[in-house]
Length: 162
Ligand code: MG
Image (cartoon, rainbow, N blue to C red; front, side, top):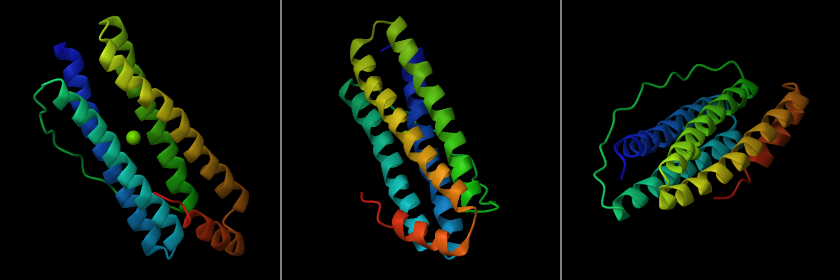
């Protein structure tokens, strides 16, 4: 595999796991704020991010590539509100989308068709993720932090499966 593409995919594994770590921090903040349902939603997301990392890992293993394990950055668990958590998570997902698009573009330029196929799954997944996170932001904005509405949303988010 092209060296630059391999480096980018190895970095993407790290980014997906770093995402899991960021969402773990968010889950912790939400749990400590007394919102078991919101926290549950984030913990489901943590598992999803690990599965994203695993998908790239499996692909690189199948291609017989060596995977370097990169370090993680410290995560600050410093949020103002539940809405603040989801606004920041949406910004983070947009950053991930840009990273995936860059890799898909590189695989396309290199005519690496199997990498393109693998990355197309991520391109589609990111559309879903931004819709998912954006929808949560819209619901939380409508709630405007009102106690009864927040408790209702907490219960609803707590039903997320996966
Ligand atoms: Mg992801």
